[in-house]
Image (cartoon, rainbow, N blue to C red):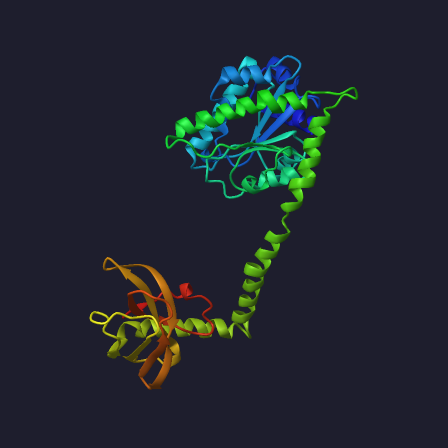
Length: 388
């Protein structure tokens, strides 16, 4: 990794038209004996790459600690429309040019999968500082763990489950301040203290063989206690069984012979859409809950007769939705049940339902009609609905 990073940084600095002196100074501290901390990912503002730079004087003392140098390697890209993310990258590059941070704070350009793979498999610490609770997962940290790279992260995303003492470090404080600026200052202070009092101390606590047995124990614990619980296997199985497998079956269903099912579905949608506004309620037999509320153990019986010119009974579905009523308002749907076709004739259909009320409370209810076809896998694929 060291040789690749040195070569890439040299190329990046040359491309920026930096002087030979700047390039030499930037490269001199990149060696395999120094503590290297990586931060590489999408530069969204909630990732808070700026936390490390909230106190530059403090950071100066950490990276330039005599005999215990620390190198921070940053890489990543911001969305073209994310001005704040772009400005953050610009600021990191500007800080990396300061005399005290030259070769200690590094930004590698043109982040891609190859560079990401290199960093997640080679740095000593993987740093992650998202705003709670916005981290969905933190997959870069999961990949780092698979390579024995020790994590130092906010307890959010996967690290909230993955963190184990002596197998990494965590910013354990829960969100304390409503003011995000104050929260950032608190988290930055925790980062500085953890680096000063634990991480740097353990890394440079060398034994007679020239390595830190404590640091090696962190690596072993990372591999043994954390990595086995986070693999891609379950995610791949979920994608296959919940999405790809079903999508492939759906594709075969619609392809048929010469796309006949797809053509049939398109023609059916056209027919239903043209007739939808002509559906009329002919009669409606429902309980009068304005006088007698629905009660536990009682039957709910309803019947709806419709005129459906241009449609057939199996082109439609009907269902009842029930919810507990409180303060003249239904806030939560408690039950949804489809009605059955009781009778039908050309241009007419009657739906009915008879069911027991199994939970207590005062209910309100409503009915709705929706298009129905065996080739229509999801209702959202044809978003027509008529409330009754």
